Amino acid sequence: MPKTLTITDNRTGKQYEIPIEHGAIRAMDLRQIKTDADDFGLKTYDPALMNTANCVSRITDIDGDRGVLLYRGYPIEQLAENSDFLETAYLLLSGELPTTAQLNKWKTNVTLHSMLHENVKKFMEGFRYDAHPMGIFLSTVGALSTFYPDAKDIFNEQSRLTQTVRLIAKVPSIAAYAFRHSQGLPYIPPDNELSFTGNFLNMLFRMAELKYQPNPVLERALDVLFILHADHEQNCSTTAMRTIGSSHSDPYSALTGAAAALYGPLHGGANEAVLKMLSEIGTVDNVPKIIKSVKSGERKLMGFGHRVYKSYDPRAKIIKQTADSVFSVTKQNPRLDIALELERIALQDDYFIKRRLYPNVDFYSGLIYEAMGFQPAMFPVLFAIPRTVGWIAQWEEMLLDTEQKISRPRQLYVGATQRDYVKRENRS
Image 1 (cartoon, rainbow, N blue to C red):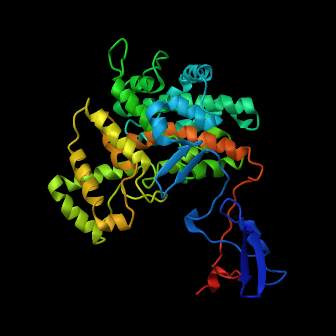
Image 2 (image 1 turned 180 degrees about the vertical axis):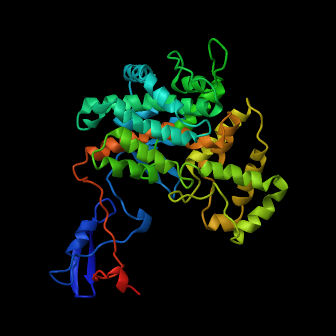
Image 3 (image 1 turned 90 degrees about the vertical axis):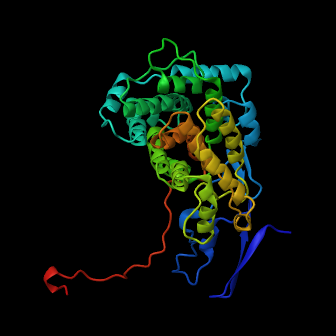
């Protein structure tokens, strides 16, 4: 059976055979469908790109109906259990898990690039004491393009590798300094003897001690959270990274745009919305009333449902387990009981089951971050650190894809037709 789609244009009666590849047709193949020679050809209209594939990718695969997330073919559950963040980063960037020698070299390279130029620190000191950490973060990442002009040589493989290592190494330092800036605390330099996440905790929370020793439970929890957030296919911020990168801008500039997309409350701020909702609920006794108001359409249940997942988000299952380990060494968050009761009722209620509304990754992550000592303003910054790996992997894949050009969507114009200018004194 041929893999084609037969289209009959009822305007002209003509038939067209459109090839089907990977379960998709090419939008440009529709351009041949015209009413006459002057017709531009048929376009597709897809607001928010809800059913449009803008690239071919080999990085991340999501089966939303089955609740499956794969990085380069590896299930996210196996990576979260057995890997650490830098190993997962190597996998996403190179396509394969590293050997011991490759991993050691990779970790050394990242560690050696974690320091920030003194002028970068002075740049960050220029922000107001109450500046939002994410605003500081994305502004500073953008400023790095002025420190590393060699980043503009985007088709030089060695240059791309250098910028990749720089970005992965420096974004935790920038994030930690943004956090310390918001707290009015001095910046803490990296400690090369600590792990990637252990060093991040050191730069965040070290006070007067000579040597900071991260809590191993929190260190591992942060590693798992970073693995879960490293990439997630063609989401809003990744699409921004690819779109900006398609103009051949340097990776620092493109990543700044991706981080700005992540800054939005519908993307990187969703877990903060969950915390706000749990605070509004107040106690477990109020949960049935909230469920009733959700079912009547009066409000939304934050942290439930996902554009892609139509079953339980696999990341949410892992995060729930991670929450248990974190709360075993931190003060129990009273809002956790409210979250657990919300989940218990929703998973048994036909209203949510029929609509396939299940907890997503944001439902528990905010509770964990808060227990670790972060204010909600830091949540999108914590998201951006691991997602930097995914953004870079997607950016490089886009650059090397011979089918990609500068991103330039079409539109359906429905405004005024051509008309003549009217002088101001003659306008009614």
